[in-house]
Image (tube, rainbow, N blue to C red; front, side, top):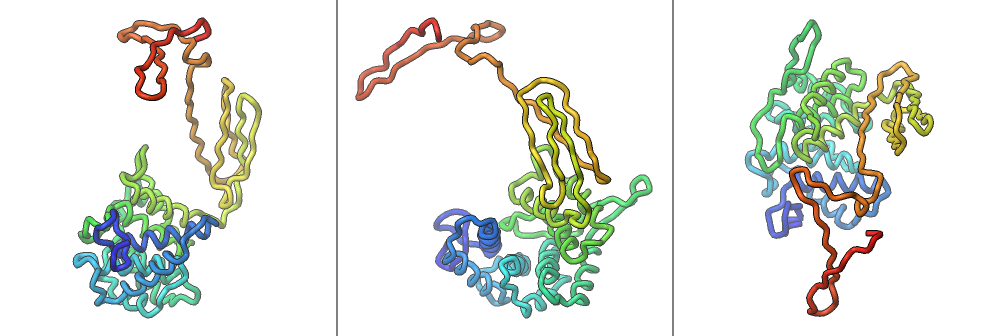
Length: 310
């Protein structure tokens, strides 16, 4: 935390409003998960974020001032400290906000009790105008986000923009039929290792969690493993279950509900015999063993001969 109360990436570097907002939200979510939190630091960050909502706050990034203010607004809303006046002010600048900033303003306002639905509807119309949809094989598919350039210090990415849009739609209009289109687009941007960065991963996972279809019923699933069957009710309370087995044999997963489930199978193995019993082989490389005892002080190491038991 720098002398202005803002969180920076490293000690003795300039803090950022965006990073402060992310840090504050992390503390709020950690507290909700019953993890220990420095409440004094949490409250200081909230105070600084409230100050950063002002348009004349001197520590905003010049090329990302509106986005930083929107990020601060969204984080304060998560902490239950939304300022309605600043929310309305930022809503009036919807056309100048980049897509992720606009989506965060929608999320912040829509999540509050007695939200102005007319205001939210207007913001959603602007938000949807930034989403490109094309027909593929007769079906609509996500085709990109219209966005503005943004300061690299706030880690912009297409994934985060789409994630914030998905989260905003899920919070404001959870019954929106096009929400599935956004979810599919978000998943398609990812790969085997996620979405390209920790920041993008976090945004995508948070959006997918927010858009979970909590209104549908649970799905009974049975996994038949070599050492016996396992059962679970997958749903909002238990979205995922992991089972492991050390027995060889076939594995079968049965979906007993009306909704599809995804099963991932991963095999990891090592030789059953301990490594010291393995016979040295030469197949393009040579395996040798040596044992050295490290005595105390400055005495040299002593070579040892392995016993018959290894």
